[in-house]
Length: 146
Length: 138
Image 1 (cartoon, rainbow over the protein chains, first blue to last red):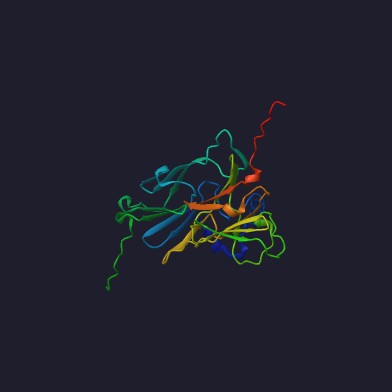
Image 2 (image 1 turned 90 degrees about the vertical axis):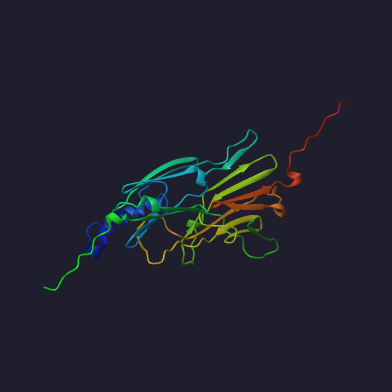
């Protein structure tokens, strides 16, 4: 899913101008980076040889309202955020934040070692470390001198 | 508690109160306007802003000529020996300004931050609170 493949094609990538136009149109509606899928929460993904780190911004979500499932290659983040409930004598001057309940499933390119998954929620930032299952790691093949 | 600075006597030109995304800037970083709720209670106004990544050490609240500016500068997330492979959201600062009405008691503003959400309590000035005037039979 982490398709950055088109960058390989450099400047003559035929859809480049189309992407640029699409980004400009998108920027009229908000400032989303190129690949934003429109799903909540937005995620960033880092990888090294063995692990994947996924981060998401979920301000105002408490850890008890967050549910993270890992099965096989798929990570599912479920959660909800509650905003202030207005009392009778209160009124909004401006309301931009929302009550939301969200589900987002993310498929990784490998099996996840379920027992070693770590999750951290701090300052409204979620950080998940998802190690690759040992059984899924590539095997080194030794080349012998004939 | 977040820091609150009051600058009442400053001679600087009035700050613009538009959406920061619309203001020309010379910053190198992205600047985002945090999503904000403002609701009014009987004797306070409450402002709540989503600013993921901030805590009490990197958020600022300035009040200058009745313009309340909230800003925050979260640390961008970086992981050593990892390569970013997919990117849906960008890092940057938060900044947004609001014009306060005259009936806010700016001396007694209080702010807290929790779970990446900034909450500012703006008490109404005493003379702005509704007064009951009893009418006596003449």
